Amino acid sequence: MELRVLRYFVTVARIESITHAADLLHITQPTLSRQLTNLEEELGMQLLIRGKRKISLTDGGKLLLQRAEEILAIADKTEKEFREHQNLEGGEISIGSVEAITSEVLSKLLRSFNAEYPQVRYTIFSGTEDVIKEKIDNGILDVGFILEPANIEGYNFTRLPQESRWGILTNLSSSLAQKENIKPKDLIGIPLIIPIRPLVQNELASWFADDYDQLHILATYNLIFNGVFLVENELGAAICLEGAVASMNFNSVCFKPFYPEFKSGSLILWKKHKIFSPTTARFLQFIKHAFQA
Image 1 (cartoon, rainbow, N blue to C red):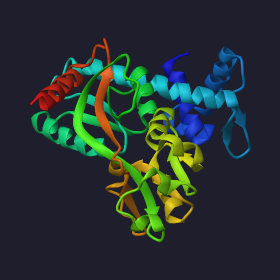
Image 2: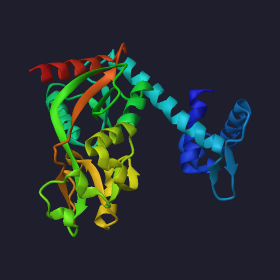
Image 3: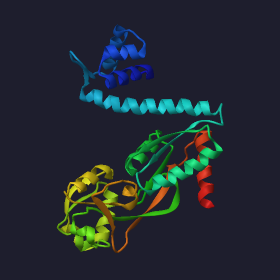
Image 4: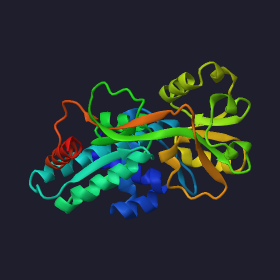
């Protein structure tokens, strides 16, 4: 498979039209159709369903779209890294971050780094710890800002001094909103919206101890934003980190911390034994010096 043909395929998949994609790619429609047919023959399966009004993807096409986007992202990143060797003042750094207290840490680091290297550009990706680590492993991201608990085997990391408290997000109309803090038994019988990650659920099970088996789990989430609306509409209370909701402006919900206190630490991590671009290597050195100081 050629990168050029993968770009053709991705463009068609996104626009859902061979005619419009051909115009955007500055090639003729017959040429584009022939390239896509050759790609299907090369892979031995149909990728596109050619409807009268739009193009849709088969299951094989959906899989190829996912893989093609990853391949093209790595290819583009590789080209940029080689260009950086010719331009040490610029370059690009790709960073993944969970939406929590690490977001504030990241913004302050970038502000300081940008003051020294104003020509550097940044790609910021928000996601869960597992997705961020997967993209680091695949070479799409350089650095990840994540929360513990996390499996960090195979990574170098710097532990941040910031910690975030666990607790619940509850509707102001709930009796839980009147409490100063939340004990395990307070949540028995309450519909709960909890994080989907098994490592986090294990930590929560340890905190709840014998009460964990009596909990009513209504739903799970990977990012808290959608969970907030469930709480707003009084479907239940969401177990979450304080830092993940601190900057959200909702008038009908509030955060209540757990007691005994339960906190998660935060990390910056990157792949071991990886050769980074000069710009990213400089950024990692900046991080190390910042937290050593």
